[in-house]
Amino acid sequence: MELMNQRSDSNQRSRRSIRLKEYDYSQAGAYFVTVCTKHRKMIFGDIVEDGMFLSPFGLVVKECWQDLPRHYHLLELDAFIVMPNHVHGIFLITGNPHVGAGLKPAPTSKPYTLPEIVRALKTFSARRINEIRKTPGIPVWQRNYYEPVIRNEIDLEETREYIQNNPLKWAEDETHPSNIIK
Image 1 (tube, rainbow, N blue to C red):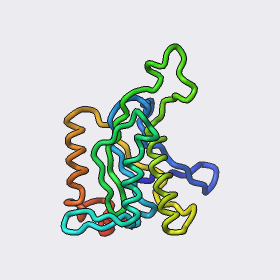
Image 2: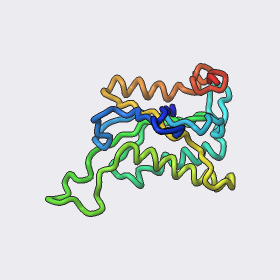
Image 3: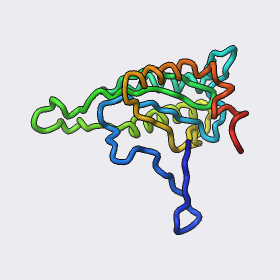
Image 4: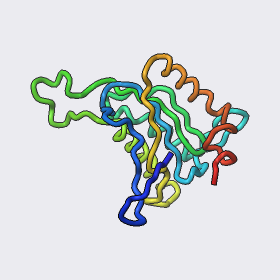
């Protein structure tokens, strides 16, 4: 899900944003996030008999996911799955921390955005995985991620079902090694 385009000045590359223009990713809402490992390496575990069995690295990612609300108090976690080379999850941002803070927001109270939350998940988990592997600074995740906004209850239920059934459809998944176009 990493999208690249050429800069006009040289061989340098830059990321092309896949975010919705003019959309405020700090506003309350539900967001479906998919993040892939670097080069889609299968490091988080294996699908066995339609179930996901997590490796130590997969367990780290799951623990980091579950820990996010401790760092972002207006964040609720919904459906989530760790797959061999990616994760799917639903973040629910429940409000703006400035609301109810009086005339001036508290100095430590600032709205956080979906990109900040995803960056935290990737950073916290990569550091711990690299500690286990003894490979400090080696990328675990692709630079970008996919995050459609969930627009209504029907979309939310369909997304939850997709996440829950992801191991059952692993062989058809676009990130499955046999389906990746090289």
